[in-house]
Length: 372
Image (cartoon, rainbow, N blue to C red):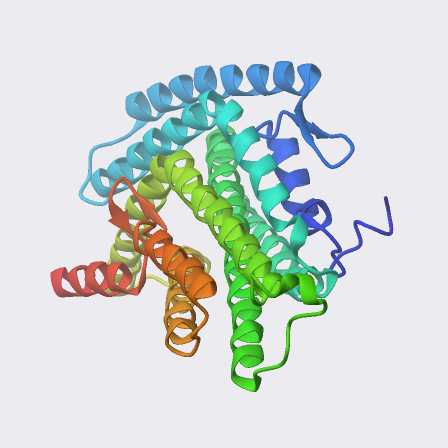
């Protein structure tokens, strides 16, 4: 198990997701155990998750009440109050939704595990260098931001800071879990496209496929079997994409709204602090780090979804190129069925109809800076 779960040397889906699963288990949002390459619900982890969420919700109500009763109304306090309320409300909503959708999320992880089981170990190893660095670096970057808050804030706000810390890490790990699943599905699309490219090279080279005379009725039987297998794999991956969109849609909406809200608030606070000409370098550093953190996170999500969509679109192009370069009727019919399947499957990563791609980032960023 230690050898399988080494960092940056993943060999399967479990070792690839090892850091993310452990962080989620600590937060109480991973009430599962892995047994013989299958995900199973764990009763003890489920009880722990229930206790953590209940304590989290009750404590959140107390913290917000204390914040509202102790705050002094000033010009700078009003936007800070709006920021804190939006952050806590949206974060608590995601925590409750995550707890409710623990069953469908278990089914999703098991499906991704089965779909990615066909990937070679070399693909996992290359992907682990990106995913493990991203998961570990983002976690410790968020911890550094929190430590700065602990240094700067007074003692009476320590407990509220711990509460916001839990919300921030929970949202971060859910976003990392989503991005990791998107990256795995992107590699699955890439493998299907590579296999189709090999089929296209075989057709162009016109190598003989018949091994025995009994196959004279069905020309190129192994090529036909290969296409049927790839079509079945493509169907499984596209079904997983739709499942992923359904389960993580509310979380993605909250992530997008909260990210741009936090960028706007921290940019406002940074400008106000500069205009006041007060020497508070630590607060300036904190605001800049928050802007960098949320900007980087939303860019990574958009990059993963957009590159995954592009990789899925390449499969359709390869199928049409193969269709134009082959003359066998049975194989041509199979390719036409494959093409129809691709047309009926919109392989985009979305949230409640909102497509997560570069156009979303461009539009929202343009509107944000235009408002400034």
